[in-house]
Image (tube, rainbow, N blue to C red):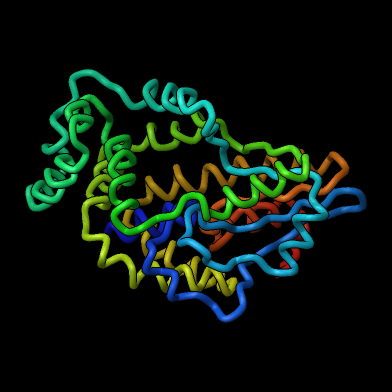
Amino acid sequence: MAFGWILKGLAALGLVTAGGAAEARAPQPRPALWKVSDRDTTIYLFGTIHLLPANYPWRSPALEKAAQQSQSLVLETIVDEKNPASFASAFSKLALSPNLPPVLDRVSPDKRPALAALLAKAGPAAKGFDRLETWAVALMLLGPQFNSIGLKQEDGVETVLKQNFSAAGKPIGQLETNGEQLAFFDVLPEAAQRTLLEGALENPAEVRTQFNAMLAAWSRGDVKAIARTFNAEMSDSPALAENLLKRRNANWSRWIEQRMGQPGTVMIAVGAGHLAGPDSVQSMLQKRGFRVTRVQ
């Protein structure tokens, strides 16, 4: 599984894009938006990409209207930038384990030079990587990789939506705590964790073309194109698909089912990959008897 999956997959599950991707923008942004509604409840489902290039256009009149109508925003999880110790504590609790093999021994020999180079870039912090479980090393290495391709976290969809809802005095909730989200990585079989780690080692320059295509598909609301990407990439690791996609989608669909019992209007913003393909949140809701309507 290529580094492309780490960028594309976690982007649409939802993370990331590169600075060069800003050139691949749709003429008029129309990222996919759905709603589930009954007599007194409306829940909007908006598929996101967590990090975007600076000034990348993604807002549309339909999306603005839905946001204005929504009385609250619900995200996958909330990382409290004012209290990073909370996330760090949840990460350390799951990531640290005794008697692990050296991290260089956890990738195939042909990947070791690339891993060694990334560890060197990480500086003194890399000395502690041998104590981290493999999934945690993969996530730690994504930071430098993202920086190397010009990511702009402050321009990410969730960041902007949080700012807008907060400024309007609207509450912001989460579907998973930081610990619950990290736990989905923690329970991955070691083979899947090593797939994740090896995926983080390839040349980011090779990802730009792939990700430009996905970013353009997201911007124009081409859910089929996103689903095709996921079906191809996820088939390489059923464990990743089961833990990072299917189980979480099932949990969220149950949350939505319960929330439909309360009146009001809510916007749920999650990675676009969760809203594409046969195991999407919408598909699971439809199987539960709910009518899901495409708004944009």
